[in-house]
Amino acid sequence: MLWTGVTLFPTFVCNFSCPFCAFSADLNQHRDELTLPEIERVARGLGRVLVLHIGGGEPFVRKDLPEVIAAFARHTAVRKVEIPTNGWSAERIGEQVRRILALSPRLRLNVRISLDGIGALHDRVRARPGSYAAAVETVDALKEMARTDSRLSTGVCQTITAHNQEAALATYRTIRDELQPDAVVLNVCRDGSQEDRASLDVVPARYAEVIGEMNGDLKSGRFWNYPRKRWFQSAFLNGLHATVWELISRELSTGRPAVRCAAGRRRALIVYSTGDVAFCELASPVGNLRNHDYAIQSLLDTPKARETLGALKRCDKRHEICWHTSAPDPRLNPALTLRVLRRAALLAASRAAAALFQPRLT
Image 1 (spheres, rainbow, N blue to C red):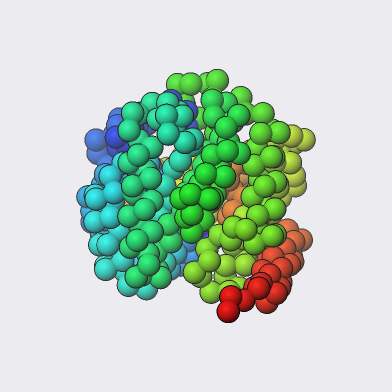
Image 2: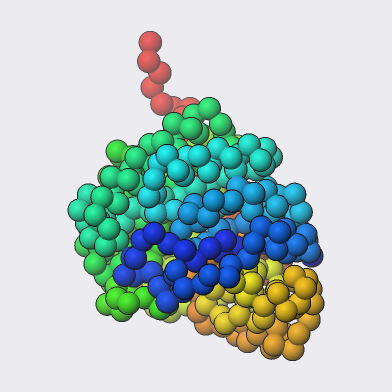
């Protein structure tokens, strides 16, 4: 069994209370989360995983997170892990990151710190005084760590809500010019159980102007995501991001573009800290691994799982993880994959030309 992407929620515990969080109703509500031995059993039966996405909750509050990831590295042969964080403590997060890299030496780790505004705006959007200063400190600490370990990539994730959209472009420019992370990704506040329903009222034009500048920066070479990765790998990721951002912008303004979803073809999987399993974060769980002796195949063979898969093939919902998982899969979306590859080649060529003709200092 091959999974394009598996999203693991190691915990629903969170030390923030962001009003726009799509998982607000689940945060800090579950006391019987999967233990490390249980997660080991789950990972053992999954099969091959290309990318492990970590969700939450705040992942780094789980003290055995490095061991959890190591279990997946051993049993699923995963080589790429993505971890989002609110950046609450540079020291504590740095310790966890060092342990992850030590326990899983063949792993490539991308840590993405959330920054949704500059200074007081970020603190207000996150409803947490001092959170901006803590996040910036974490970005700087992980960037310093990455200087001596090429397996680590330090990114920033910017989420646009109704409350920060007017400053979204200025926020991106500050991240690009001053923080200078390895990568910047842009999310849109999505529907869930958030207390602040008004946060969902994002104006499509605000998103479009940010991705317009981001994609222009990629084309001109002003900012290049993942600069320390291998040449084609970096070009592919930039081509994928640029294409997906345009698809999301189109969806926000005119409706969902046609795409075959990986979740409806048993290519993507969500494993929650409670043991519940879903094919997509936007769909209900199909069962609980504890009721199936932690055997994923047993759970997937149930009538509810088969019924859910059929419904997902007709799904008209999307968010960032859907696009990034489905778009580059040539078995599902060959035309879209070709578009990503063509864009990656053009970006790589323009970057190479810029480097070739850049004036040399004497």
